[in-house]
Amino acid sequence: MSAKMLLNDLVLRPNFKGEVLAVLLALAIPLLAKVISTFLSGAAYREFCHQHTTFYKKSVGLKQRVLYMRLPVPWPSETTYYLLDHVPMRKLFARSPKLDAFALARRLHYKVWQVPPHAYKDTLRAGAKEIHKELSAKKLGPVTQTFETVVLESIAELRQEIGSGGRRVPFHTTFYRLAYAANMKAIYGPNLPVTETRIALQTFAINLLSLNMTPSLPFLPTEWWNKIIPSARRGAEARDKVTNALIKWQKEGGLETCSDTWRKVMQVVTDNNVDIVHANRWVNMVLFGFQGNTGEQPGWAFLFLLQSPKLWAAVKAEVDALPPDSLVGVDFRRATPLMYSAIHETLRLSTAVFAGRTTTESMQLEGCDTVFPKNILIRTMSRASSFDPRIWGGDAHCFKGDRFLLDEGLYKEELFFGGGVSACPGRHFAMAELELLMSHLIRNFDFDISSLTMHKKLAPEAEDLALGGAIDNPGHKCDIIDLDGTHIEGVYAGVADVDNC
Image (cartoon, rainbow, N blue to C red; front, side):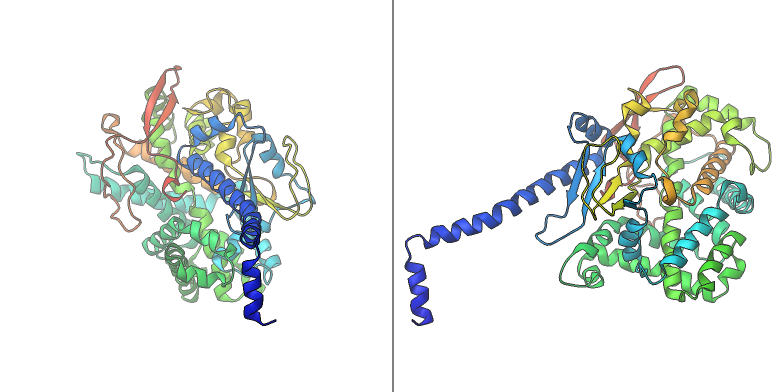
């Protein structure tokens, strides 16, 4: 029988079309169900990012307090579970042979920054441990001194630009750039270009979502996808600008002019013969970590403080009572307990940390009914933790500046620097930066609370004191509880990464 006759025979079979349709439906229905499920989960996640309190309130009644995420594609892809309850998140950071603490770094960080995940694994882990050591609370003196010096120089320039008559400035842009410049010079010394690297890092951050996605795409190498997808291409180009700036800086003697802290960290890397390109791709990754959240926080903190009049007056009084000169070495938790508490309350409400672990075998976490399969990623959703009423109380959705002062045990519940063996190595320096920057801003400037206005986010390359267009009706509000218990509905620009969710 010829092929043509066979084809005719098949086509003429009475149930042929029905059989084909049945097969197609059998294949399509599970895939369609998975796509719809993932889309709905993704929609919930996007809603969470854009309005975190709304998502959290809606999720409280869910039986399984875990959000399952997977790319809606028919090929194997990373499976991720986001934890929504505080207790399992805490347990995720415990040491366990069933959890790999460094797999997330190898999967996301190393692939995104093009650091070979295995070639220098032990050396780069040793480098990370050196960062923990050199930026421990006991060894911060020299870098915080340099940070404060640069901050005071920047504040003097800002005072001159603003003038005695005052002017409107964008909190987030102004304060982020102050913190960025001071951090860069404190760690890397005077010769690494500040503006060039900041613009590139911010551009990279805006496009980071795409760079996190492309390693999961099939058929082509990741770097090919990074050239094909426009946002991934922009992110990769910005990433490479920072890496190239770091390589140039090192070749021109950057390790001779940087801080002793960073020189000791890099000694671990150079002594083990990591080539200069891969070494500085790793440095780029670390640099992004230094700048990821810290510089944003003063903007959020002032936004909350200025809408809490009683708290604002009390914080100013605390800062006025500080020593008149350098504040390096001040125990801010004791000297300015309200400001210290308000900083932590700001971090609770505005920081996004999605730290995670990969399972090495099937397991459960204490406080969570889900059985997690082997080789999947479990991640925290820190904002969900931040609104858990069992930890933070029934007013968890509110900014309450003295929350941590009223219950100092809450300091132990914080997850915005991660936890366990992979907790943020720069967390002590980050807190010192926030305390110093906010204190010096408060005692150098008067803030006009009556003219508080929301403005659109500026592009990374915008002028330092430029203002985006005014937002007449901000889409987000925030609930504030002042020191006297007064409830205030405040204005709020939205969560820190609202444009990138």
